[in-house]
Length: 118
Image (cartoon, rainbow, N blue to C red; front, side, top):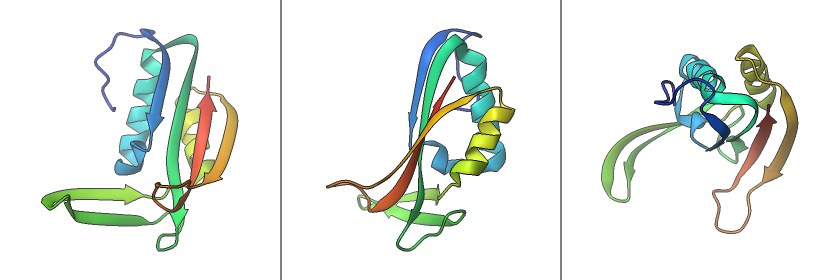
């Protein structure tokens, strides 16, 4: 995400669901700049992320060392929508809309945010 392999203004839209939660602040800024670089004028982007759950407050991190019985090193960040909006504006986006929701059936029980960008 931080160095998308596309030329400038190459794509009309970007959908990024729950991926930026694995990036630290600097990596997210780089990803947002990369999104902006490849998105053509008038294009839209949708960025979604977890904001909190029963065990993790907004701004906290959780780690996982096994997944499906395999060793992994994963960090999950619970992001603040206002801070992410500021970071996306700093990258050159306009936040067009924000949707906050809770999880649905079969999903990890968390609160989530969706940011629609131009």
